[in-house]
Length: 138
Image (cartoon, rainbow, N blue to C red; front, side):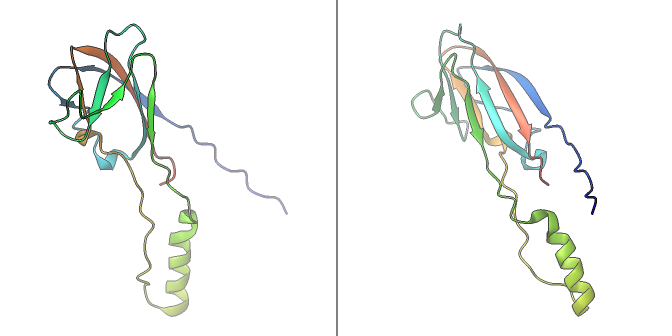
């Protein structure tokens, strides 16, 4: 039996130049849940004078946020288990054809980051880069 060759997909990513200021700012209003971002990497250049801090709202401060120190990129990654997601719709269609009714089966959710609700702040304006990787298995 000859097996079909699997399709090759390329993991796409974008880098976003960002300047964290003394007032907390959201990373990007356009990168909400529908953007399917599953991994974010924050990188403050080694030569930066200070760290940048990450929080979940505009109230984040240098005392309450997660620290991203210069020269130490920080990765935040969601691990979505594959759990037969690839065959889920096929199995539901098969069930429909066998029973003549649609199943109320649970659909496996996908977990992603909402960058419109991630805020950055620093003690002084600090240039940095943010790497954004989208979920591949949808």
